[in-house]
Image 1 (cartoon, rainbow, N blue to C red):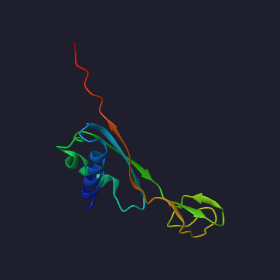
Image 2: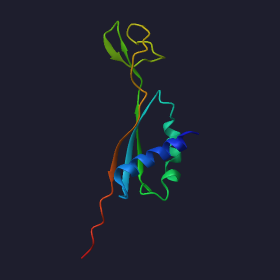
Image 3: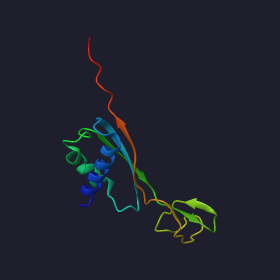
Image 4: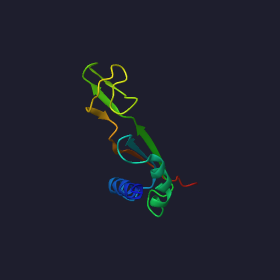
Length: 116
């Protein structure tokens, strides 16, 4: 399950970006062609973030579908099967989305306000 190493890389990237600030949530984009199983990534998230500034942070996974550019239709389409345009049946390897594996944003926890 390579999602453990991917989760560790996400934690490392966020910690590098925000330092020791507590993180409330992390949003990642996972493309259908990325080779990453979103369910497995979500499964290992709590264990991977334990003991870090991301401990307790929610993981929000934005699943990105595969899209390709169809030259015959002259537009970007979401194929139903493989890389075949659902409109005209043309095969296209001009992938426009679906390979993503990106950290989109990290939301920081609001600092606790001391009570008077």
